[in-house]
Length: 135
Image (cartoon, rainbow, N blue to C red; front, side, top):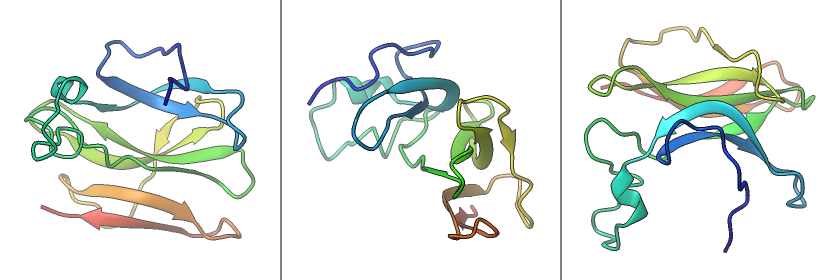
């Protein structure tokens, strides 16, 4: 019930960055890569029917971000929201395990407004499974 990563590099309290921690809970790190913009109402909301974490106000992102390490542990595959407040999209990116060298994955068949989520690698690292939602 406490803060895991006490220091963050985000530009504002509602900007979420990629974070990492070892399986035993040690070595929490903020990797500095912006993932989503949380609805500020999530900090004070007490009405579970509103749920601004998963149903945010216009211009903010839902907490549907997922991340996984590559099988060799050298890179992280992560979903990120990007674009202007009125046209946010969610795309899958690859980033080094230290948060550097972030690049979007050029996934076949992707439409302009698609949302790609839940990436995970096959055990041998040759395939990536994910979910795509198209408007």
